[in-house]
Amino acid sequence: MKFLYDAIIRLYGLGIFIAHFFNKKAKLWVTGRRNWSTSLEKAMHNMNQPIWFHCASLGEFEQGRPLIEQLKNQYPNKHILITFFSPSGYEIRKNYPQANHVCYLPLDLVKNTNLFLDIVKPSLVIFVKYEFWVNFISSIKKRKIPLFLISGRFRNDQYFFKSYGHFFKKNLSLFDHFFVQNLSSKKLLNKHHISQVTPTGDTRMDRVNQIKLEGKKLPKVERFIGKSPCLIVGSSWPKDEQLIFKLFQHPCFKNWKLIIAPHEIQANKLDALQKQYGERLSLWSTLEKRDFKNMTSVLLIDTIGILSSIYPYGTLAFIGGGFGKAIHNTQEAFIHEIPVIFGPKFQQFDEAVDLVLQNGAFTVSNSKELIDTFIKLKEPTFYKDTQMVIKNYISNHLGATEKILSHLKPYITK
Image (cartoon, rainbow, N blue to C red):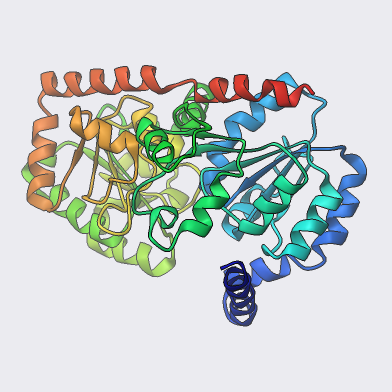
């Protein structure tokens, strides 16, 4: 099985190399790894036995970020190395100031893993949520370097637990400890004879709470909304936007404002939304003071990076992605005690599942269900009850970072 795994990794690398001639993301993946060992050796001149965090992409980084920043705060002399697998994480966070160095993870081949570890000599390794690279994990353990996974989430349908997954499940036993998001993950791992597991919750909750406390203000959003109630549509896809437009046309939406932040902001998709809403829509990039004389009712966000700062101004939120693979980040919205609505694909996220069961979030499958849910949430008593559910949920799910850090302290202070 090891031979087959190595062959697949080589083929994967070859496939990305071929794709990089015509695919922008693949090109970043390939060029970012060129001469990686030389760059890493140069960076290590200023580091000594760093704590190494590995994140697949940007989402995983945001889960690891609270722990990284707590570590730097409590142990300012400790060096931090962060690796990414995906360009979408690396390109955005390559200049992250809390890290001593940020780089791509080389392809998971034995010669790469040994060279990487020879250069870095990490004192501690922390993988965030996903990414179980067999050769890296094996090489780390051969060197007796402590290895942890944080914010893990395990399900029966994952390949570890399939009939063909014994090779990969065996690799899990090499971790010193798993800090998982929920009790069901712990029970599943225990069932498969992996006992080094502690449920600590999701560090993302600490991250979104930190963003909330930082309180970035957006005066243009304040002026746009005024005193009107507002629906924030976050990370939307075309199917989500079809339902939202039907809600917008319904009489129940009268006197409400609408802010749409699409998941993708390509010109053709923005143009389609502009044509759909016509003169009732303003673009964020062109929203100036003069626009407020003839206020529109729809604001289209045509930039990235500000959605989490828009949610505090909302009355309700609709999170996109639920009609595709899965919903996007709901925590950025409900950390502000805003009731959240989304499509039917939400089962991968504990907070969404929990809040749907508790009437703190709502799932819809069509425009009628969306309109009915919207009307229900306009009723003041129901709205306040929903907010209370969310508030209680948040208070019970903060603190994962501190729990993890308390377990790691003996390894950090060695």
